[in-house]
Length: 427
Image (cartoon, rainbow, N blue to C red; front, side):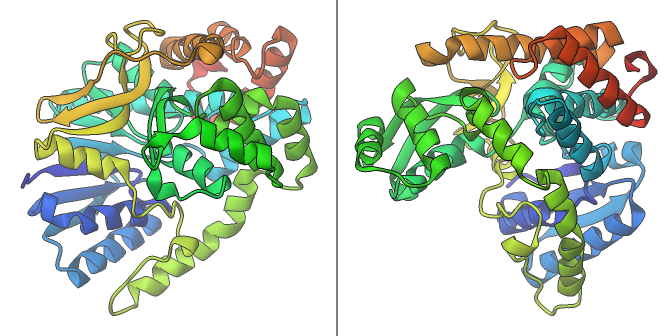
């Protein structure tokens, strides 16, 4: 098995213990490897490091785990860099969500004006990260978990020689969630999802070796009580393809906006309420003889599914496995330019992460995906080296913004709120 060094940028986050737990669970595939946790919050970083070491020791994992606040030191000698950070924390995300709502628009971590400003902040950090990688570990692969993963990957792929692959569990989880909402067994679903991150659709979908869409149509005809379940399944049946859950913001924009406005708190505000309990749980487990993370008490909770760890395993151990990832299209999906970063099944081995070709997105959704792809490119360019003018133009192209007066208003307020996390050229 591969013996590698991985730098985890953002290794002092609330999600980090769960990600390290995934490495520990697969320790046999990384025997003798080193994981360096890097973060700017020394107190949280120290807690995560000590808890990670104790979990590894309790499970007999042959992993060396260390921590540093020095990013360049963490990158020294790395084979892979796992990027999962959040500039401004959940407080910034709350602004991304709340400010657009004040103007009758949807703001979300990866969608609309909120997603756009998350991209501006994330890419400002990513630019420095890949510059450091180019100087210190130019042959390392960047495994990006930082949202919006597609826009971050687009910026890095366009402007850096560093190998980059962005990752998300969505293409695996979305079909299973639809099955569960329809009262079906998620374990019997087999689907191939592709398109853009958080905007993927199924090219193939089977349930128990039978076409899945007719089964969903029958369930819809029989009646589905839950509003959200009915919307998601009706969209799938109408388009004859399983959609990512985030498509609700586009195909049910008015309904979603009404729900978000009626809710007293945003998603980020809900998470902020729970953050102290996450750290309390981690401190408690640090004192336990055999520490174990409880999903409902830990940020993330997807401990049985951590695609970044699986993709690293397939790459470094030359496993020739197929995983959904976000990479440069290179002709894999005919509906996007070759240079666009797309979400598509990829063959992963020691040669790298290479997209499988021959796919088309469903005809009824090509228009929206094309618009989202063009927005993705404009947002990546503006975040990397653009001006305020170019950034407003990119935001206007977002399908959840669309009008120039709204884009200008949202940009001014969000740029003011996030000024400390943005380069001066974007003020």
